[in-house]
Image (cartoon, rainbow, N blue to C red):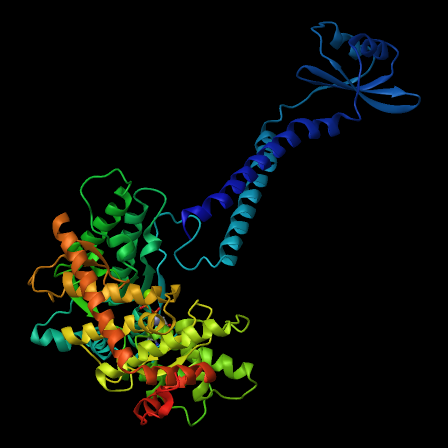
Amino acid sequence: MNLGDKKPEKKPLYVYYIIAIVVIFLLNFLVVPMVQEGSIITTDYSTFLNNVDRGNVTDVTVDGDYIYYVAKKDGKQVECRTVAMDDPNLVERLRQAGVNMQEAEPARQSLFLSIILSYVIPIAIFIFLGRWLSKKMMNSMGGDGPGGMMSFGKSNAKVYVKSTSGIKFSDVAGEDEAKELLTEIVDYLHNPHKYAEIGASMPKGALLVGPPGTGKTLLAKAVAGEAEVPFFSISGSEFVEMFVGMGAAKVRDLFKQANEKAPCIVFIDEIDTIGKKRDGGGFSGNDEREQTLNQLLTEMDGFDGSKGVVILAATNRPDSLDPALLRPGRFDRRIPVELPDLQGREEILKVHAKKIKIADSVRFDEIAKAAAGASGAELANIVNEAALRAVRDGRKFATQADFEESIEVVIAGYQKKNRVLSNKEKLIVAYHEIGHALVAAKQTDSAPVHKITIIPRTSGALGYTMQVDEKEHFLMSKEELENKIATFTGGRAAEELIFHTITTGASNDIEQATKIARAMISRYGMSDEFDMVAMENVTNPYLGGESSLACSFETQTVLDKKVVDLVSRQHQKALKILQDNIGKLHELAKYLYEHETITGEEFMKILEAPMPELQQNL
Ligand code: ADP
Ligand code: MG
Ligand code: ZN
């Protein structure tokens, strides 16, 4: 619970106390005397004396400034009150009239009692009620453990124990290296003496880095599930507080708790929120964040590694972290959690497919191949979409077709049923997509696509090409990159060749082609002129990888020109390929136009078939 939540509920509680006290005062000062004195008649002093003289008065009590007396009136006894005068004859007078006289005892013990009765007990009751209510409120809001209304500066890390978090390493597929490294840490916490015998000490901290959705948080939860030690989990953003110093206090508290519970694991998710590089000046109000970071650095230095506190953290922006955080002795082990490869994708699909019913014919290797570049989270989503599609179609299990469709759904969005392309548009899209595929196929002499469809998608794509990803590539040659650019320009080239116009449909292709061409020249050193000099730096490689220029204006101009040259050379190449194969282009586009879908095998069959006499009549 952060401070933002605390305020609104704290205020009414104080107001409540104040109202209670005011009510008690009013009761004691106004209502009680009024009730008590309601039956007492106030008379003046002469009336009192008259009554005494007439023998109507039986009892007189002098109480400070007042004289209370009982008078007979119409045969009834009435209690009256009058003001006490400085009357020396009064006593003699009363004695003669035979009146019982007494002076009221000073209400000394009863004062003590009445204070207790009228102030202490009610206030105690109200405080008790208030406490009880606020406690109830806290419970109903899920204020768990140490976190709560009155706990400023307490960390609200969730503590997992083995049995509560059901996730195991077996639930995380692929990512074998990461699992291996983490298994070692878990093993160390189980038998520290095994390591102590040799004199090895565990790293104090390990940092999980990788793009979003690759299973970093999941891995940490799996560690919690496997390790038989307490596991504190907190997100970096939970340290960010409204008040200066609160974040640092939370860090201090977290480590205090961890030290008490050692051996244990502390997991800080999205650590970049507090671990950003400290920058020199600026009035950006970053004091608080810096204090929090400083506290974290101090705490990580402060504890003794042999005690068995291991810090895990996850981030997808490792390059933005403060170098001090990454130095040995703090997060000295970096565990990369990368996008899964072909085999990893297949395993992830299988792990998630265990949760749904599938047909026996489903081939996970095929699906994994088609879902090139998907992260673990996307694969989990693909499996779920497949199950949903099966339900929608009234089937009891998901089939291969469900999976194929769901890949497209996850990557390109749902089919847009109500968007109807005009026939002309559809034809253009067909030629465009075939243009890409044909250029790719002619350059590599292999099936370039898994499937092409020209059904509009909610993402805005009018056609969709599923690339094949036969083998994993780690190195790309200059030729391969050039071919890729040519393939991207192939769509536009086909439009130009056949329709002699250009459309807006190629914007994404242009973006991609430019990106590759720019990277080739500015980063991969693939131009003669710049040799091995980097003209651009990449920031945030895991989050899209924006790049920033690192060269003079003059160089920049040359660079831009080189990019244009490179792309237009490939564009010409694509045009030439299509020109040389224009018969196949027509044939394939016609097939796609009529069927709306073409698979890789169908594509290759048509491409490799001997040319009919089609070419003449076009
Ligand atoms: P992040 O790396 O962004 O923290 P998460 O760990 O939150 O990603 O992953 C999100 C979801 O994606 C997980 O809950 C899980 O369902 C799925 N997922 C991601 N990676 C894997 C994996 N390697 N194995 C199985 N499921 C995975
Ligand atoms: Mg995460
Ligand atoms: Zn295109």
